[in-house]
Length: 123
Image 1 (cartoon, one colour):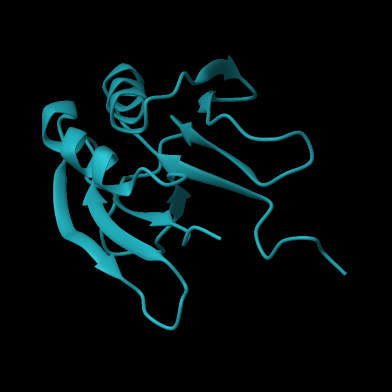
Image 2 (tube, rainbow, N blue to C red):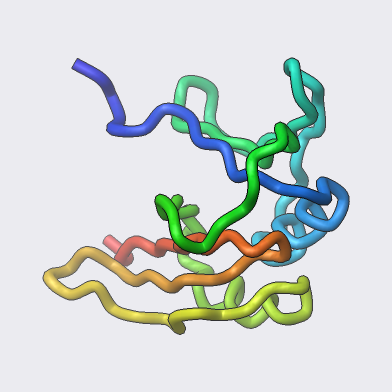
């Protein structure tokens, strides 16, 4: 039985420098760039945990496909406050999920992808 429903994700980009700058500024992180058949920039993640990357592999960014949710670890509003300055747009502001599940929001990144941001409830 798998540990997680997802084990890796990739977000397509057309301009790696612009996309890395957007995510690093919005999330307050540093991404690791490498080439694994195609240029990627990997999001920080725990060893053995779910990971993902920006990928410059020729796929077109889209706001109409699947939505990836990035954990913002108690800082959802802080991340949303940085979206516009990083070159993106807030599509759905800070929203309570209800039933004690936490909070989420949607942003459109610098490449045109719609991304979900997720914050758990304090426990």
